[in-house]
Image 1 (cartoon, rainbow, N blue to C red):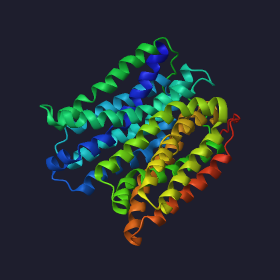
Image 2: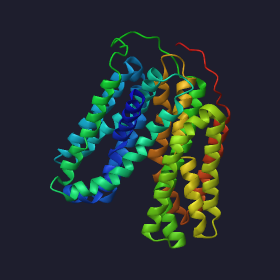
Image 3: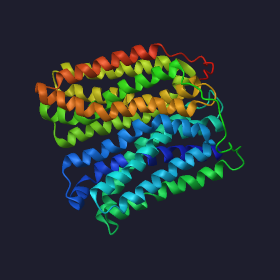
Length: 387
């Protein structure tokens, strides 16, 4: 029961920390009507959350290392809940954008905090499945948000009440968290610690995450448009492509951790995921017919949509003692930075050239670079490097 409760807390924390993104996507129309906002202004809200996460991730990772794992996780859940309530109470667009910064900080804090929680509760070699459950929480949040947010916005709650009610989810997470970690040792707040530098292997993971972030931002944003404009697929079929790689990614997140941990090794698994990213982009660049798009969606779910399960496992094993939170933050800074810039750069390239092919070939190149970076990562533990 304790292990089940831990899985619930991990999934809720990750879903809550990233839930602002489906809020802005699903509720874009009522938000535009409420604040007389243009479409690009809704996009700016997404950028605020993602860019905030990228900028503060290293700092929040270091902060998580200074707290007991349950306190760091509790802080993440509290930030997400306060962010939801604050956004629901926003009286103007600028206030909404400012309050979404809280969600960006929660997103930055989530992986460092939950990785340390896993390390404190589960021995090495048995963390793969729970790490997969943790990361699958993001996809589950997106799925449930797509169903429940429109229903809530159309009810008496309205969009404001719906976002505020969403704060009950991290509250439930807090209750379960303290129930399953009762009696766990506490780290004294403000305790002095040696400053430990991030290991070279973790830095390679951060650059790997940056490459995959650029790729995910491009693939996730523009695959439906490409399918419609180049092959005449309907909006519904484009949505089905997104659903397919989302479902594949959800399943892969649950299974990739144990396979990487016990069978293939993290560096091989990450290299394979990068190769799938590159292959998907090559197929898009040379696809003679729209039928190729469905295998591409599966490849996206197998590779770039699930890599962070293995990346987080690798950070736990490759970080020096006392630096897993900071290492997680540095890795996520790379990924979120790539996510924040990938879609605008790709879109500008399409506008400039009038074709998607150069963009897809660039994504394929990112896959090659990421595979090379993964090849230099090994599972051996690293010695602390103190500055």
